[in-house]
Each structure stands twice: as C-alpha cells, then as structure tokens.
Length: 285
Image (cartoon, rainbow, N blue to C red; front, side, top):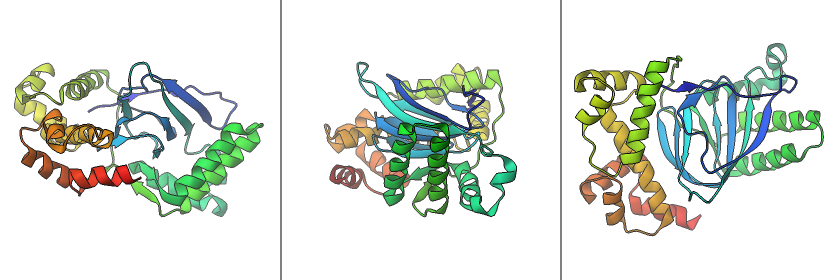
C-alpha cells in the first residue's frame, strides 16, 4: 500500500507541534511525513497500521512513529463519539543538528534511530512519559514545553520498554497514481474484511491481472495480499475479543474466516497466543 505524503501544519517559530485531536475519525489515509509522531490515545479504539504492522489499538496506547514511516489509525467508535488523542510532532533535528550530536543528547540520537520501525511504549516508561505529556500540555511557556519534550525523549531513548512494531523498513516515494490505487485497496479490504474477498476482484479494482497485482502489492507491502488480508482480519478480531460480547466461534466468522480452525491457526501465528489467551490478558488489565 503506497502512502500519501502529508504536510504537517506548524508554526515556523516553534520547535515542535503539540495538539489534541478530537474527531469522530482520525486522519484515515495511509500517510507519512518527515516529522516523528508521538500519539497517546486518550479515547477511542480501532486498528492501527504502522509500516507492516497491523494491531488493535485502545485507550492508553502510547506510540512513537518514526520519520517518513507510513501509518494510519482506523478508529471504530460510534459516530456520535469523539476519538481523542494527544499528539506531538517534531522533526529529527528539532533542536538543531549540531546540538543533537552532542553527548548530552545520545539517548535521543538512539531513540531517533530506533523509531524507524515504530515503537510501542509500555510499562513504567509509559507511566512516566504520560506524566511528562501532561506537564507539557499544561506548561505556561514555550521553553517549559520544549524542556518537557526533551526530558521525555531522553527517558524514551534510555528505556528497554519500547517494543518495535514494523518488521521491515519502508522506503516511500510520493506518487499519486500508486497512492490512489493502494488506498482504494486498503479501504476496500477494511470495509469488506468479513466477507469473502476474491483476489480477482481486488486485482480488477486496480486494473491489473492477478499475477501483476500480486507482484505489485508484494513489492510495496513486503507481503502478499492474502497475508495482508489475514492480518487485517486478525486485527479486527482483536477488537471483538476485547469487547467480550461474542464467543470465539462467532468472532471467527465475523472476522471473515471460514472455520474456527483456520482462525485459531492464523491468530496464533500472528499474535503468538490463542484468541482466548488474548481475551483473558486484556480483560485482566
């Protein structure tokens, strides 16, 4: 899936962007930008795409997306509800290249390199980072906000509680034709994941033969379309498991799997645990 280049609106006099997003839907096109993006989900749940990683997201998640790493948040809350997120966006050299190379900023240098795969922040590091975020958003001066950001990034750069998300690095190039084509494929897949999806239909939507579409998709996504579809279905099933309203058998069919055995096998392969284990782990939290 080819991402869209998205220009981040910012005040040129400020070192970084800090905002609170409140929408019924977050920006829901697969996109990238040179700024790193730290997102704290205050309210909302859905499916998150970062590079080649597809996962369910929920309130409390704290994610750092690296520079030019494609990503999208597809929230699934009710239309009457607002999804809310605290968002920080900053360029790699937000404090200047020369200063960033100094030994005092070694942890931040390390963080910038690690962020290329996307990072999920967990444990005590997340708790302390959220405290810094609150201080940042409540700070009375631009300098105080900058100091809070630097302290938080220094903390993250020294932490062992940051889990990489994408398994491969993505190179991105802006190309409107490919962008439109692949956004159409992802929108179709997410909208129809529970139904029977025929590869010939997806290829036809892209005005390609099946063979050419499969090569095209794998070259850009580093995986086959069938693998991608399976990951989308598993990502969607995670939300249903956490909602705890349907049985695992019902969720298997609602996620587009033809039988419970295929669902269990695919779930274990992608999540390294059974659906029941996944449900119990989240319900205990």
